[in-house]
Image (tube, rainbow, N blue to C red; front, side, top):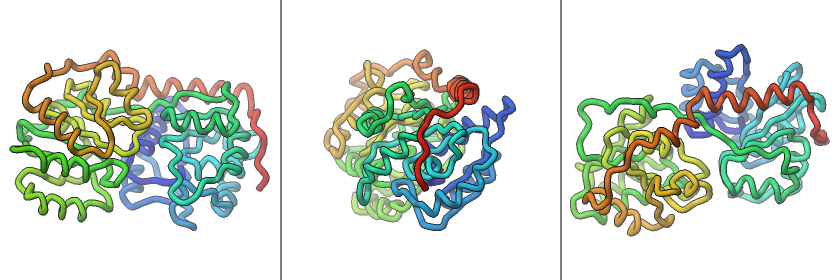
Amino acid sequence: MAKLEPGGAQLSMLRVMAELRGRGIASELLCGWASADGLALARRHGVEPTVWGGGGNVQWTPAPAFARWLAPKLQGADLVHAHMFGGWWAAAVATSAATPLVASEHNQYLWPDRAYPDELRAGLDRVDVFFAHGPSARDTVLAHGLPPERLREGLSPVVGTQDQPRAGLPTPRIVFAGRLHADKGPDLLLAALGRLRAPPVTLILGDGHLRPVLEEQVRELNLQTRVRFLGWVPDPGAYIAGAAALAIPSRDESFSQTAIIGLAHGVPVIGTDVDGFPTTLGDDRGIIVPPEDPDALAAALRVVLDGELPRPRPLRDYTDQFEPARVADVYEHTYRGLLSRGSVGTPVPA
């Protein structure tokens, strides 16, 4: 894993590891970089990570030093599953030619610094199976030479779909759950709340470097009695269940585990038209608004809060496919198939 911090990609990986551990498949977690909250998250899932940390965040960077660090640690592995570009590129360099390599990409390729097309192509040549969690990642890897037969649709396990509402929560309430980073759009939600005449209490579940900025935005909008920052909670489903609305105003979202929780509980989910998110909320499962548009988000919140739409029913027939055991079945089947066949990827020169 290139970057270990609280987030959907990391939760997905840790939940699959836990499910497979119960089936006798042992895993070791090697990370390029980890935050304190990320380390705590892994430990809560029974995993003690080994962290390189020699060059900062390598999610979007091909780091030869990270690959050199990985190489001796991957010796003897039956299979390697690497997450995020910087993780699976380094694994492609470090993994022996005979060892099957699985890669997962959970986000769009929105290179924050510069693109690495040559490294992308070389790494993809080595990958035996690639799980793309969203149409943008899928299209990018195919355009850079991944053989289509090696491509799979990424699946993430979701927990919290069976949680009961937590006692004592305000009603009605809006809920936001996620990292307080720009890509998740919490600032857009606050801007939308400022456009409502009488917004209900909004619970902000999660944390991140934008929290002080968001707290100042709350003060500027005079929303101190309406917005509560609760930090990371272990059971977000208990806060989402029974909510008036679940707001997910992301600027980048391949797949939202939070949305699945809301859909399972019959909570109106408002999300944005970015990457793979419309796939989750399509077929009238949720409400889709343009990104970067607090006016549209406020209008959607008004429609929901004013009762202009019927309350959705719980969509368990859709959300059950994301139960951890069912998702782990997919990965176990993939792993066992690769182990019986062996690697077919082309080694990447160190």
